[in-house]
Length: 130
Image (cartoon, rainbow, N blue to C red):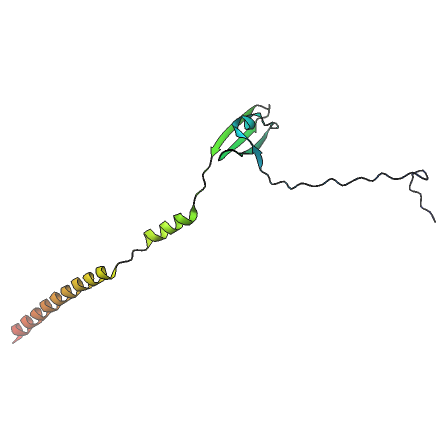
């Protein structure tokens, strides 16, 4: 049984080629401030325009009447690895072997003086008790 597709006999149905989809990265590149100023913006909308010639981002907005305004943002790239290494270096307070030995000698000398004073005090108490 033949189904009626409502086309005349011998009529080829049109074939529609699907549109190729492009990836939308959300980044709009422009060349300089003049290009950013001339970029069209819809009313009540804001676009982010990245300058391909310098490290600048333009935020272009338009109010309800379509009047545009633009903010310019200059950005710098931070080297976080060097900043982390510098932070770790400032947090670690290592001493050299010579500094440790000198401190050990000072503590030992003070400990000797404390022991000598303690001995004197205990002999004095023993002498008073007798």
